[in-house]
Image 1 (cartoon, rainbow, N blue to C red):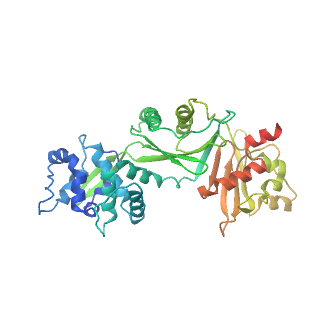
Image 2 (cartoon, rainbow, N blue to C red; image 1 turned 90 degrees about the vertical axis):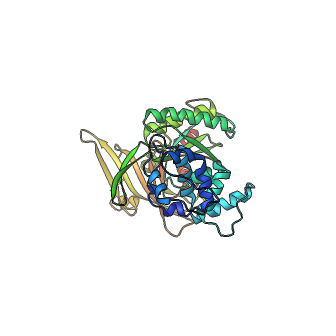
Image 3 (cartoon, rainbow, N blue to C red; image 1 turned 60 degrees about the horizontal axis):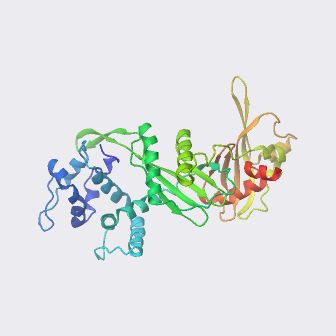
Length: 388
């Protein structure tokens, strides 16, 4: 079965965007399969064209013999066949000594195909990189090991072993094998991107006036960010079980310790109750102008599992106007803040939940917000240090 969604090949236009010689070069390794499905590749020197409609029919009706490499090739080329991606690939080709065909007016698809044929790993890496900035919510895990071990970028052998270990878990969860881990070292942190499959989907499709169905496995990307200075890793993943698995597997393969990143909480919202509006002061934080508490949730529990939600333009100001404070017994389970950053004309929202969850409107806000949370005592590790 095909690994990726084949609906993108339901029309010939996408294939026609690829120059004839480049498309033939992309399809040539799979000639025997295409022959068996009734599609014949014309020789490069032939004057007759490619039967695009027949090729679409083959791609839209995969069977158990469909080569994964064929679908992968078309998938990655299609994903990177945009003007923005073409600029990136041209720069990368020049930086890596990759010589393209010299056509002064290539299409984005032409560039994508050539880079794929000359350096498949480079194209896949640049494709994966676009997912780094998409996540908005992270869960944090911080090592208890002191001092924090020096971080060394994992070798390809280590990454392959990690991917195989991840595959064992994903396969048990009916998500297939074929995981891959990409590493992107940045200035102060190291980003890891885990590409893997999701459960299969079956959806209806329409080819002309004929109805059919497409059966495919969607791809999924998990993002993990490791801070070598603090030994902290934050991750954006789907389920609680998946986060637990990633926490253990990354600890095992990067630091030879399944519990290098213990599953303990990082955040507390008690400063809101303990310090009142002093807990949202940010005058000592570079990058912040002001903070307001917009919403707070209390868990009262009981037989009905009662949750109380308080909202206002400024919750602390609203409480003060009525001569009230926060309840002393209810557990604070969530708080949302409006934060005015110095790099923006409008305020953005930051949401914190005790344990390990912090949500930002932009990933770039993370460093500034973490500085503020640390200084106001919302981070448990910092509180323990102060007590000592």
